[in-house]
Amino acid sequence: NTAYYVILGSAIRVVLAVCMALALNLKIRGIEFYRVAYYLPAVTPAVANSIIWLWIFNPDYGLGNTLLSYLGLPGLRWVYDPVLSKPSMIIMSCFGVGSQMIVLLAGLQSIPEETYEAARIDGASSMQQMLRITLPLLTPSIFFVTVMQIINSFQVFTNAYVMTQGGPENSTLFYVLYIFRNGFEYFRMGYASALAVILFIIVFLLTRFQFWFSKRWVYYEGEVGEQ
Image (cartoon, rainbow, N blue to C red; front, side, top):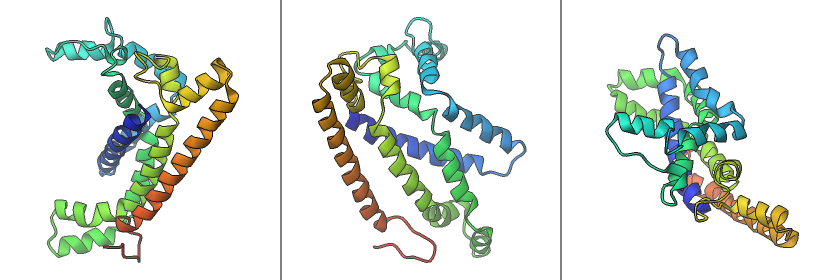
């Protein structure tokens, strides 16, 4: 369950955060309002956010199935379905990518405008500027966001605890929730502590691997990545 949430959820949230940052970096009227609006869900308390999404995912009168009915699609059981419970959790988590969006937006605004002017003089199209300038120079911010997303995904707890208690059929029984159950429900503190140490080791090794692998795709100003 945790690996599913970490791998798929982190990838989707990072891509979504990059797309949001690119959209909110446009110079249009009222862009400040849109930035605030997209960031606000990220500061919603986790418990309150979980309760709101329980209502949205309600199979009888929730907003999710109401929107599906408008599109002529059948309703879903969302977090109450063992197959859809983890995808539903990932959909819910995507509304909290405002914090990552802010980091990426700051990275975009740190790219010198002179670089784009030189590219336009050389005849580079908008897509070429995106692929050859924006994304390569944004890789340090993307790397930071990816590392933090993976670490945070391993620690997912509140949503599952409030919304599903690990169900249905243990489909949302994530690692930290399992640690909590063993420590504070079954009072197996030694076993829970061992699980916590294992989680630390997994996250530490995975983070070290990301830093090692970043040398191949993260480009810092004045440096050349390994080919």
